[in-house]
Length: 350
Ligand code: NAP
View 1 (cartoon, rainbow, N blue to C red):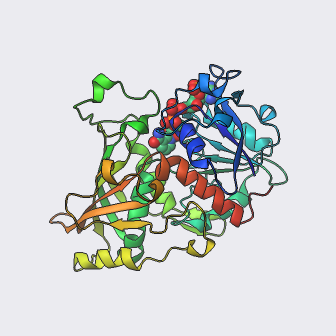
View 2: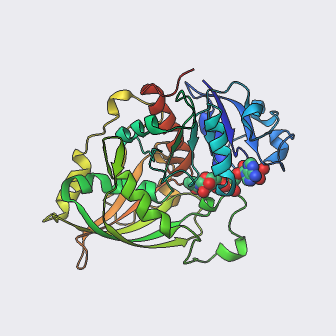
């Protein structure tokens, strides 16, 4: 399938380019960014920050304006657009009959737009049928969640299914790549921790409630629970770490039940054999010093979720840490997995 990338020059856009090299089903045929970049060769427009060589066929491609007429005959687009422009541009592509698989926040909470993590809520995909961007259903938008809601919802899913979530206290330790490129000034973050990320905390509870919500009769009944979150920026490069404390409706009597909940979890998309689906979604660490962003974020091509330090609490029932690669599982890799599911479910066609 022919694929375009909106926001191709940014941190997430570059990750798309890297991850899609050699993909079995998808081939990049169009790259778009702002008018600052449009008209230039990609190698001049982007400051390539991936640690592999920029593929020659991408380097020499001319970056286009993010307009549907500029993208030729693409079958769909991935979006890594800045949220200040994503609403308008993604809407224009959907209205032009070009499906959009987005990382931006703008459409995530739209009641007709799936906020999708294939292993967690694959049934939410049917929301697409409610969208009215085009009369014939050819143009639609699917989003993936914020890079904290992704590891949080994945880490909570087996526990919620078994024990029922009541309330959560969360502290995040978010890598600098989560701020895009050029992102946080080095003088602000080197040897430092910044205890606030603008706009981050208010997204976490609503997105997780939608992700863990039940699909029924064409809409999502969001999961109700309480959450206090503190989002911090730390000087790791990739991999967001979460410290999670959970109170359950039916608390497990022992932490071994929590471990078993992860071990016994059945992956609802296992039988689809999607190329980006990790062989093992949950990697449980017994070593109390693990997981660590530098050591573990890239495991299984960055698509697994790491859980460690599972322990009983005095205030909450269970405490643990979770880690996921923010620009792969939390952004571009998650979006590629969404696209693969959309192919298998017949929404994406050549
Ligand atoms: P970024 O590095 O700042 O990249 C932003 C991209 O948007 C660039 O390609 C930029 O093109 C393009 N852009 C900006 N203004 C534009 C305009 N007026 N018209 C067309 N294109 C325009 O940001 P990022 O970290 O890649 O994030 C991209 C999106 O993904 C954001 O919505 C972000 O919230 C979301 N996200 C990021 C992460 C992460 O870990 N980084 C995780 C999940 C979700 P130019 O280079 O031409 O300016």
